[in-house]
Image 1 (cartoon, rainbow, N blue to C red):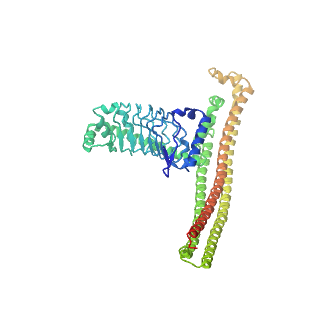
Image 2: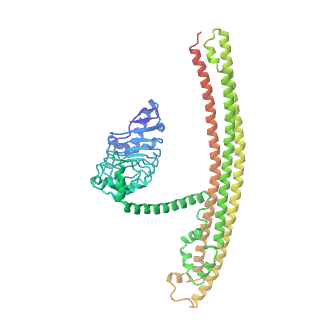
Image 3: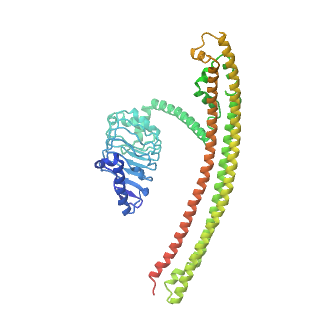
Amino acid sequence: MCTNKAGNALLPLATNNQEAVSHHCKAEAEYWEQVNTENEREGIDFKDVTSLHLDFKNIQRIDNLWHFPILTKLQLDNNIIERIEGLDTLVNLTWLDLSFNNIEVISGLDALTKLEDLSLYNNRISVIENIGHLKNLQVLSLGNNNLSSLENLIYLRRFKALRSLSLNGNPLSEDEQYKMFIAAHLPDLVYLDFRLLDENIREIANVKFQYSIEELSQNEKLEQVKQDKEEQKRRELDSHKAAYVEFLNGPFFFESIYAEDVEGLKIASLPGVAELVDLYPLLKMTKCTAVCQAIFDYGIKHHGVRTAEEALFNECLQEAVCENQTMGVKKIKEFEEKNSEVLNELTHITDQQKIDDTIFQYNQDINQLSESLLALELQLVKQIEDITKDYERNITDMTSTFLETIQGFMTQIRDMENEHHEKLQEIGINLLERVIKGEMDEDMADDLRALFADKDTIMNALSSSHEIHLLKIDNREDDIVTKINNWSTSLSTKVHKDELLRNRKRVAEINKFMDHLHDELDNLEIHDQI
């Protein structure tokens, strides 16, 4: 069964007897419609379910779990599951039981980065693998499987939080080195096969495997350094992408221009062209690379300005909301101070006229409080509207400035490409004349010689190369322009959407509070003495 936050029971997922549910969309839709109907009767929403128990359900395939986005505990033991799948959406899962199934390969767990307790007990697993992303793993049960290699257990050294490991019932557990090997190679482990690892055994094991552990630790340190560098590069690349200037801080752009230019690579190898290319400002430390670097530096700087502007907007927004909330709380406290004894007094008043007057005044105070809170909300809406307009104006100005600057830089690169193309045309004509006169090297490759069949052929080849270069330049400019425009548009859309949701939520809160105050009075009147 599965339970929600309130502990209510839910219907199980599809079982082996409902095979069509897993394989046919229509049957699946009908099944989930039935499940939804049943759970609606019980007042259960799948989105609120945190624990799901599906043990002993004859389940063959894991499916349909995307219905449970906040699930933290999933019990699928004692079924006939052969493959781990369908769990990618359960990113909040911390406890997973897949014991007593028919699983042969560990897979499909990459998305479960919050997982702390994993049981794969009594399956058919022969290799520990594909769980490297489970950095928070604390308890791992792999007993009664087909694990045979002690060396495979070194894989578990990466799990620094792992405290309990169960491997009993595997072929490797029969090895005389079993406990010693684990005690030495998993220094953070506390429990092995549900028993406390003896410190004396750990000390003996550390001596026994001293040299192999030292070598292993050294290799792990080197690997960690390598991973740290890769992670740093990844973070840097992410920051460059956020600024829309990735791969512009070096010769990468030039290399990408020539990557798909087959004719250009042929032409670049011709006598006289190689020397020109060496001087052409599209290589390292040249004019084009300098322009690319200028684009990169400007993009990084502008991203910082955009981020700062966004932070300032959020700060102003939060300040306005907090100030408004403070005034709202003050209004509510004034109401409570004035009417704190009213409800209690009403239970003791016997004079009908006085009761009516008191109730009337209390309702008036409630209505006045409602009007005051709604007026404050309206005031906040107008205030946020003004803040948002200023922010959008600044964003529009920043976007325009960014686009003008980037387009200016890209124009410089186009001018360089056009200049280079003109020089190549001159060289092409000169080489054509030399080919006609028989002054070129006879060892020239046939595909190169074919370019000089006549003037049109060499000019077409040069034009084709030139167009490829211009297309690359245009595409990169379009990419930057599109991204900055999308950022501006999506940011504005998000700001308005968030404000709309905030306003609706606040109005709903006020109305709910007013209803609560009226209900208190109505419930009191039910037990009134008159």
